[in-house]
Image 1 (cartoon, helix red, strand yellow):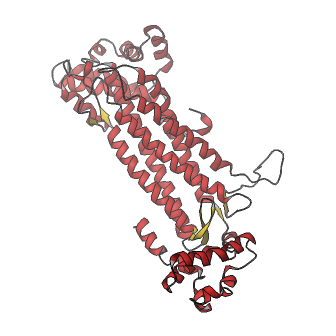
Image 2 (image 1 turned 135 degrees about the horizontal axis):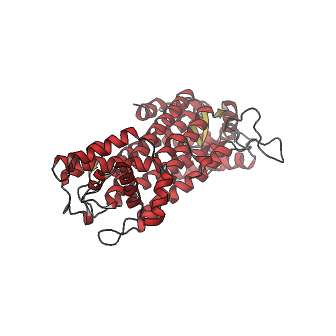
Image 3 (image 1 turned 180 degrees about the horizontal axis):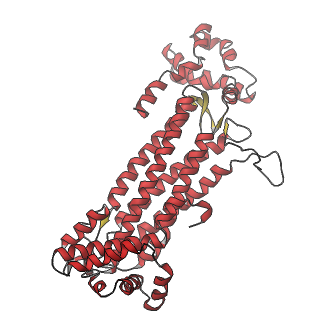
Length: 436
């Protein structure tokens, strides 16, 4: 975790103290149920909770010192609790294995992280929707291969992003549901030394579901899907960021990141206003995506378990969630304050002498009885003259002067094909589909 790209609420989920608090809750709830079953004295859980409720501080350094000797993190934690609770602590961890604690804790942390990420997505979606409605009918050029294609609206660009992040939200809800499982099944997952009702009790207390079948560990295909979902969300962040970066290029300059008073763009060139936020988001997206592959490689463990996944998850768990949380918040800020320049959009639309209307002329010629091949040839030969003139010539004027074209279409019919508003007649339909 890099503090520069971290926010407090998400970071708190992954702090050592937070982890140990979840460990304690798992152990105490399990002991509580074992007491109800008569496996251990009820006083054991009572002693644990009594100490916990009056001693809220987790002594991370003390636990670390014990682990330096035991070389085992869960045993170190249990030893620390026993030193503080006393005799009753011996009934902790009855029939359990370390993975029961570690895997269930990771499930809690990932579920809580997902909850924060869902809040982030909601804020981002609200910002995108506001800008989409603001620019619903703001004309701009649509590009394919980076080249002028046909007119769109800037609101439609925002609507595309809204639809994409709505899909991402649904994916994250599903991934959260899949990851939020609890395993308290003991060595190799057979429940040989612990009753399945203990797992059910702990799961309910922590807002999880019992893992249907665990092999001492929760199956890692669940984790692979979770981190893959984060990677897809990161890719969507990059997609919108790259669009902003392209629109901010000097030759385009249809939109740009907000440039705050006192901000500096370059140490050498005072005139610079660089898309630093969206460039940063592109980099952060690469990092989040990079965590998906090791999560997938963690799926294939030896037999009922090994710990090859453990070191991986100590990295990717906090790093992926913390980084994506930061990225979503940053992107929300970019969208919210994005500077949009409708006049420059119109200027760029008009730059190439009406070439953006070529398809309408092509279709009109075919409907007037010209073969598609001939219609394409007629429009293209005039369009290429406009292209080579860098837009100083007018496609409409050239078409009006082309006898083969005017033999099929009148000047009035040609002029009608250059109506910009024609391209926006279904904007309402698209918006209704996206924002229903």
